[in-house]
Image 1: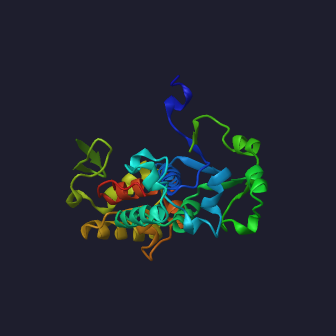
Image 2: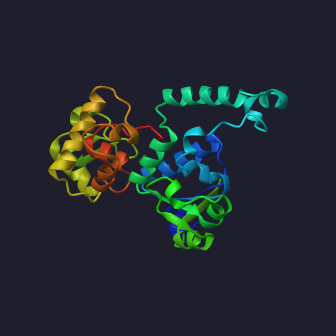
Image 3: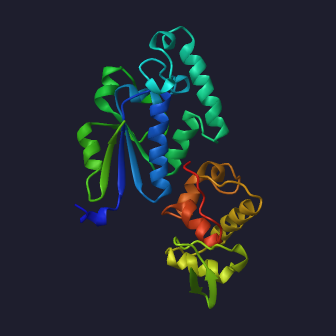
Amino acid sequence: MMNEFNGEIKKMMIILSKATLENVYAAFVLANGARMEGIEAEMFFTFFGLEAIHKKKLEHLHVATVGNPAMHMPTLLGGLPGMESIATSMMKKEMEKIDMPDIHEFLDILSASGVKLWACKLAMEMFHYKKEEMYENLDGVITVGDFYKQGSGLGTHMLFI
Amino acid sequence: MEKLIAGKTIEVNEEGYLTQFAQWDQAIGEELAKEANINLSDRHWEVIRYLQNEHKNEVALSIRRIGKSGLVDIKEFYALFPTAPLKTATKIAGIPKPASCI
């Protein structure tokens, strides 16, 4: 069906449920890329995704070395102590080379670009997080229903990461 | 392809970006801004000149770099060029569309 805005994307609603570095960056790049194209974007941080906006945790996110076939590493090896730190620091070095901001700076960029940042109320309660512990420019703590309401209108797309 | 704008014939690509910056002048910038529904203020011009200068120095433009320019922060950049700021501002400036994803 190409009749809604001729298929044009008006708004991206991106749900982040994971805290591994590669997933967080994927979500951030997609949200920022939408704004760069003139598309509205909102993010909903739920379950482990909350770590990406938790002030104390967001600096310490890791790449997954176990259960990640793209690491090309035997599962046993990936589980060795220190392996995640090595993979993470290697990835961070590569990202610096391509001018990729760190998590906190990326959140600042998203917020300044007009991306709405929402924390999931249910997950906040489950992890016993308080709003004060979260990234300072968070737009609010809302329910799934609130988030769907934010996404109403033609040309909205939802993405779950 | 050719495009007639502000009384001049210029060379543009299929997305409407000038392919030869030498053909750009202020009147063309103003017409391109009108096409993007933007009324250019002095502030817009400061940003446009900054972008042209960065392009001349072969700097790869990105939103992050704009934020670190010391001239304009990201919030103001989006306020000046609300829809797709980097794409719109570079088009008005007569320079190529940045290939950056950030």
